[in-house]
Image 1 (tube, rainbow, N blue to C red):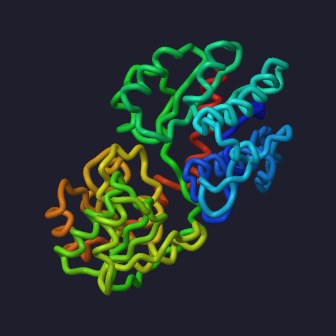
Image 2 (image 1 turned 90 degrees about the horizontal axis):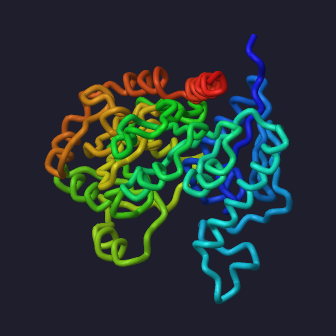
Length: 365
């Protein structure tokens, strides 16, 4: 029997884990699942997070650090330091994370951990470069833009490993010290299957150009279908010019839906529209929708071809015309196949098992 591991981990000092009501932060959902899952397997997990963080089976280590933000939106102020008119918020945010990371390394130097698992890689790399006696694993949640690839290369050492959340995510930096690709996983109990959708499509996500809600609107209009839009609104020019003018009987905005209630919207949708304008590293909404039986129609960007089984659990398209055509033939998709696909590849249990295997493999080196 293999020895149980002692693993230190952190995600952010900006807000608590779980996050405040109304805040959806996908990487935190993944950290929670991994930490809780490994703890249930008997591993000792040391989770570092700000005061107020409460995981079910893992105690948070805060050392008095208060979260920077609280409330319904990530930008709502909490810590009194944010009231300083001369503050550089980017630097403060960086230092808040680095404080937690420094706590981890201080304990690591005492031999308390076998392995460190960090999610905000950009803010932790200098520590890993300076202290090479312990393996450090970074899960990358964002696209690897050219500047980031150069930074990762600059700080690379043999004790620092990267986990990608899709193979597509690796393309800009294929020569990094990759440990594995591990797909994100879901707690399927939170996303029940539905085989009785209503006559409506769904866009769910942040109302930003990169997510493409304006394209979803136009595709729904071309296909003459109803569309529900859910997500945090952007009150700038994009919202006012590209989204708001289209709202009416057939295009409805329902606000920012709490995470624990989004399954209801997935289950009622004939399809989830994801006309992404960026290289999506994974796409949790893809698997959330498919878990509920809802096929996904997405642009051919980033991980889409890996996560969506084209023609079986949705359609991969290249433009608005193709998206509208895919909407018209969405009835060909078997909703049971969507659920089965997630059960086979994207469960929380499978994700945790894969992390455990990779961590053991790294520790054998």
